[in-house]
Image (cartoon, rainbow, N blue to C red; front, side, top):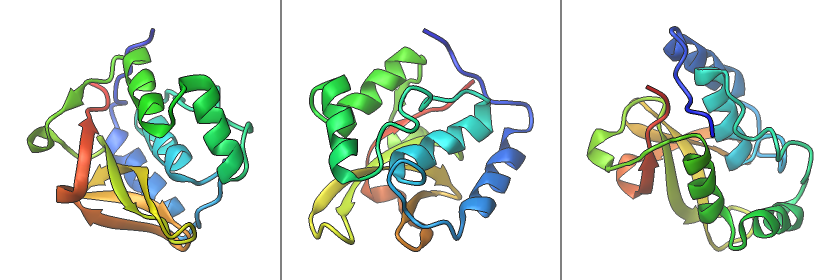
Length: 150
């Protein structure tokens, strides 16, 4: 297990990451909610939480299959397992800060059903990727939150 820390200039790196990704659309295995969030964490900390997932899926079915084969039940168990592996503490909504991680439930634009998704806290909102680029949703819709680095 590895404890991750934010880099000294993490806030500038996170800003640059969000700016660079602002017009990149959702693509499974490249810029989906997991890869977007893990890439943001990589920018903040220099630690790649998705190292063992990269290149292993490219659509919804293969993403779900990967999560289920590794974590038995899907996205939330995968998040919890990664958080434990890297000593990332779950925190109450009241203590989140820029660069932290949130999981939300929202309607998938293509699937037309409610799904869980990951995002990064930025300016008091949850920044997420969708099929047009990134967008933000109110912090209040977040279900669970984790603090990144110390």
